[in-house]
Image (cartoon, rainbow, N blue to C red; front, side, top):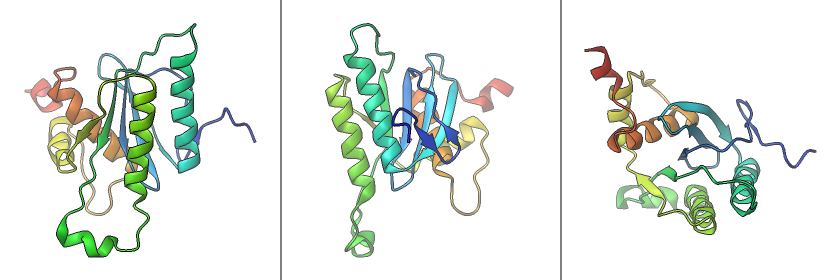
Length: 167
């Protein structure tokens, strides 16, 4: 087994140095890499082991004196435990919360500002802005990560909504 290989459901994760990483945290974590112009450069879905490998890789770029860290922000779908769903979570290991903790620790280790947490309902707005069709059922984790990133990067003025580009 190659410990330097980061493998996701959608293939190998490139060991590049993205400007932004948007994340849909969970047992299967969706990720999207973005460049400085707000263009998505890679998306995937990772298990916990491969998410750890990705975070280790990002930290190693930071601690390697020869390379500058291009990463400016982790953008994560926030997790809120509402009273109406709290009982359903009884007995859960709350993997989503654990993943957010892993990301916040890496963020702290490399000295970035706070992790950006975006409300889950922002995905609907981002889908409209980006012209992305939402499925009737479950939204793939990588697509959720894409929409969370798109929402935040649009709010920052890095990428315009596609709806307005076409008008």
